[in-house]
Length: 114
Image (cartoon, rainbow, N blue to C red):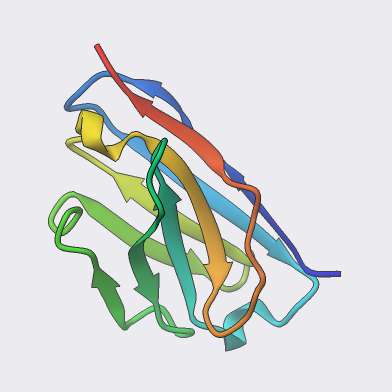
């Protein structure tokens, strides 16, 4: 059974940082491209970033470029998203997903507010 479990969300002030993690199991993690998506209240899903299976190819949405860093540890079957300089507009539920499949985690809430 495929499982994707996110953690690390929370409430943070503008300008703050959070590191999200996504623990994967039930598939060969190191063989797949992974991505982070987010969904803000009242809005549709927004792609945030993706990373190649080997971890060297990364891409970011313009809205997070220069502030967020995606990474992965294939030995630990874990995907990460380091989020710096957070803004209120970053408030959303953040989910990890496997590109090209319907596999997606339940998400973790990130709230940026003073």
